[in-house]
Image 1: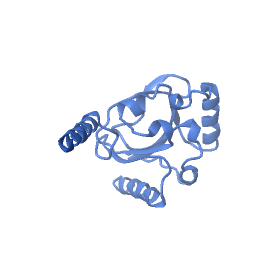
Image 2 (image 1 turned 30 degrees about the horizontal axis):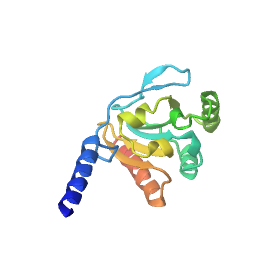
Image 3 (image 1 turned 90 degrees about the horizontal axis):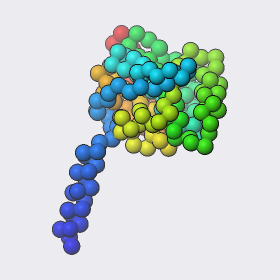
Image 4 (image 1 turned 60 degrees about the horizontal axis):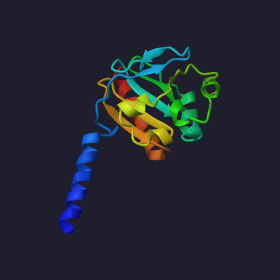
Length: 174
């Protein structure tokens, strides 16, 4: 029985390793999302700049609000680092897409922020972002398309500082 349990544990670990998840250190590929005009576009600036991506589940719009408010006051739009939001519309099937778009416009009002829309969870599936479909997720991807920070859910103060340090690191490299 003990050997059988070990076998099951080993098989589960192998399944997880093969399946993969959006973990720090993984390289990600291009993904198409929709812009504000409902046109399909490749995820902007992926591979050209270091990116801070806010991947939002509309059902969890209050998660990381303090950090987002801070970032509105200190926007990241430079030659080497940029940021934008991607709304995971499929994570909120009971909210009409028109309402989600209106919420996104309201969130960005008075900023130079950009938002894109993911109607089919393409980003979370392609990048294997565990937990992203039920949380407000923060992702930092470097210019080499490698995930340097990933958090699905509420950021701690330490994680917020970690993101700010990544931004500062890449802004210095400009």
